[in-house]
Length: 163
Image (tube, rainbow, N blue to C red):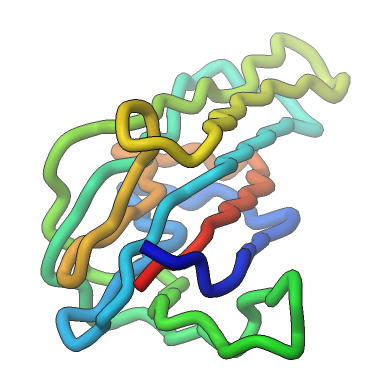
């Protein structure tokens, strides 16, 4: 396999919602001739008011992604001289078929009016044994299964594409 480029997608200060929400999905299209290997997933959540309802975020493997808003133009290329990413990023509660949970992101819990934060990070060197891969037709989605409007999320995904 040969590496093509390193890419990232970031969402900053995205407020929680009342119910289940798919904040973002990243799909490797079935027509792609590349494999996506995630090298970094970072999530940070904070609450600026009382937030005692645990509405954790999960990052799931997924298939069948549709709806929402395609936001692939905001994928950052680490080397702008190389090709754009094949990934299809969707925001705004896209419809996904979730499979297995691969990463759990704890929510902020605040009993007062102060700011609280929680951070989760998955950093992996690219190797066959410990990397989260997306083959053509596979996706990731970041989802809260219940809602909490007092939570605000920051999400960053970084990946390498191979052919």
